Image (cartoon, rainbow, N blue to C red; front, side, top):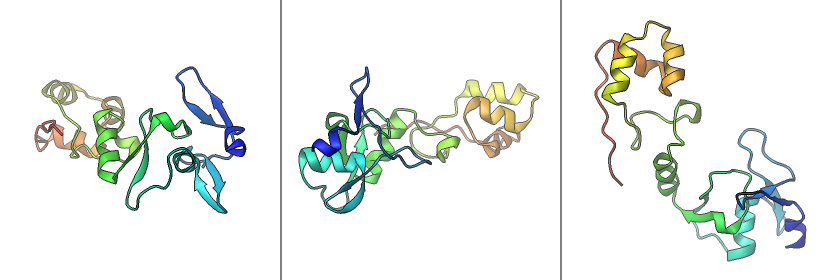
Amino acid sequence: MERFIEKVSINKDGCWIWQAFKEPKFGYGRFKLNGKNEAAHRASWVIHNGPIPSGLLVCHKCDIPSCVNPDHLFLGTHKDNSRDRDIKGRGGPKFGFLESNIGFKVTDDMIEKINKDQRSKTVIAREYGVSRSTVLRIKTGQQRKLVLRSF
């Protein structure tokens, strides 16, 4: 526990930010627990709550990958984690999230503005947080309106 806590800095939002090694691509901390190299947030869960049941992920309520505060973590399936991300609006092209997934809505207003926009599809896509292919489908009339489904 001491070795774990000494690698943490608490921010103003109550996140325990991991200060040791972090994966460069996604920012998750790493910690050696019981001889095994583990994601720091998973190690935090084990240290504070016990074993992680098979098939479950340790998810972040705060959406900060380097946060290891056990109060900011919860157990869930991959589907639970994806749903949580979508509800919070964390999806989008830069996250590899497709507009057709649950939780994304192309509004009539967006369609109208995109159709009038004369800039490149790439520029429009970045501005509206959609893929270039979605812009093309809107401009050619192929994009159907996606309705935000309730969970």
